[in-house]
Every structure is written in C-alpha cells, then in structure tokens.
Image (cartoon, rainbow, N blue to C red; front, side):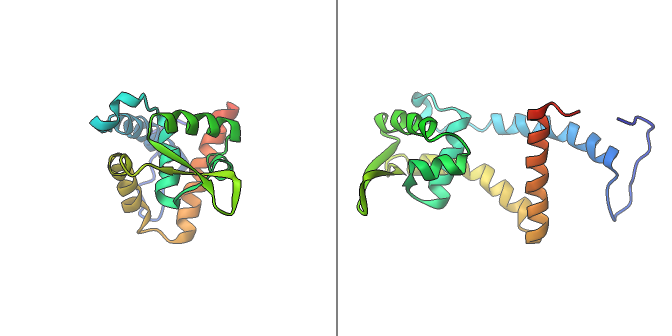
Length: 160
C-alpha cells in the first residue's frame, strides 16, 4: 500500500490508494453504526442475531417462500435455514404452513404479530441503501454490489 501522500482530487474519479484510504476509514464507521441499530423492544427477548436480519429481509422483500428458496438466497445449506426457521417458528416470529401445491413442502413467512417490529428494524438500513443506490444507473448498482462481493471474497481468502 502506497503512503506517498499523493491524492487524486479530480471530479472524474478516485485513485485506488485514495479509495482504499477512504474505505478503510469508512467501513468501521458503517459497521459501528449498523451494530448500534437497536432491536425493537418487542423482539429483545428472542435472542436474535445479525444472521436473522438477512432471513427477515428476504421474507419482507420477497414474501413467503420455502426453506430451500431461503437457503439459496442466503447462500447457506437448507439444513442451516431449517434450524433457524424451526427456532424462530417455535418462538412465534415465523410461521410455517403447508404449501397448497405440494403438501410435503412448508412455506415460511413472518408472523403478522411481529411483522411491524421486524419491518421497522430493517427500515433504517433499507432506507439508507435505497438513498445510496437510487441515483445510480442499473450498471453502476451492479458494479457497486459486485465490488462489495469481491471485497468479501478477498477477506474470506485472506488476499492482501
């Protein structure tokens, strides 16, 4: 990593080193703010974790779906999702109902009782992402998401 102090202050772009500096400063602040988002009082007793937020987000945005569909979206094994859904169903946060077209499958949804609290919990983050992404073109959004995914892969692989 260069530390020569060169900065690209042009309106047309951002140099790689300046981008890295900016993101190394920005990412911890973003993570810190995200961690400070309070779990709604009516959900505090359920021992919810960050992994539940993604599951709730898919059910809120995409509607009820099967465990396999949730697992595909979350990019985890169906057994992992099945355990989470089972735990959250026992607590009354999620509902499992038989699929009318195939009684062997269960459709998972957020219970009506807890939907407003979960929606409110996710609204702050969703609103911030909406404000950040709406001004971008679809191609720019794709590049942004691809860049975040590449960063995540780089962290997972230990790339320097």
